[in-house]
Amino acid sequence: MGKRIEWIDTAKGIGLILVILGHLHIPFMTTWIYLFHMPLFFFLSGLVYSGGKYTWKQYLIKKAKSLLVPYVTYGFIILLFYTIVNSIIGVENSLYGSTREMFKNLIIQEHFWTIWFLTALFLVEIIYYFLNKICSANYKKLTAISILMCAIGLMRYRLGFGSLPWNLDIAFVAQLFFHVGRIMKSSKILKTITAPSNVRKNVLYTNVFLMVNVISGVMGIKLTHESLDMSVGLYGNEILTFISAFSGIFFVISLSNLTQPLAVQYLGRNTMLIFALHSRVIIVGCSYIYEVLGVFQGIGYAEQILSAIVTFVIIIIMLVPVTEIIKKSRVKFWFGM
Image (cartoon, rainbow, N blue to C red; front, side, top):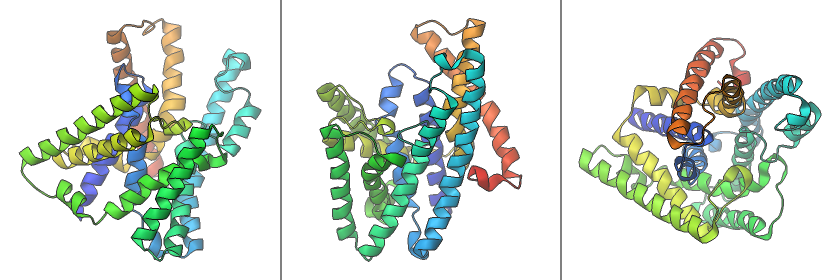
């Protein structure tokens, strides 16, 4: 069990690193990352699902505390940040409009800011809890309903329907990744990938999953000129998208079983604050500072990569100490810790 926890922490840490790198817009890498990085988090959440131990009221309160309370906390921190930024640069130059408009979007939450994931995951968890109860934990019935719900979500995308409050439209699709994570928890496939074995076999798994991920992802993008982007409800070619997403998920799992750096495991155990604030606060703040200083303003690949490296280091240097301080405080539960 200890081994299993370690690779899950590593996978979450890799996922967090990919999220940050995806938001740094490194040439070519961002498109690849978006093929699977958010499905990975929904899958891992399903992998550790434990709703069967609770009554519906207990589970609702538990998930509200772990997801909605941090959502409100980080939402108001980001709102305050942009209110200050707007007072400096002017509302007319704002990325998200006035404070009133941002507050409205924060309440409705339709693909808004990085923390869209928290409301989407909350809905996925609650929906799945009731589906699990209705189906009496029958995996065949759960799978059928999960596929149907995902199909409805994808159909909405195909027909051009708009987003739904609290990202319910994303939750319909995301719950399939969550469900597969749940049923894979005790599967032979996952046990084979994560079982202690020789390095050569682990490397083979990792490379095969990566190859399938890249090939199917590239084919899907060529066919539709769209990559997967769950944050705004884009799914491209659905069949190739799901092949690419699941192979990307298993690529990360295989890699996590192959190597488990302590620093990556640390990030996997402390994702919340870094996930919530790195993009809409630190990266945006760095962009303004770079502009004032006149650095990293070129469009060359080398400069973009150097800018991404510097910003990544700044994110870690700034947010890891803050994470440690909050973890030792009485208000840590506000921040999902």
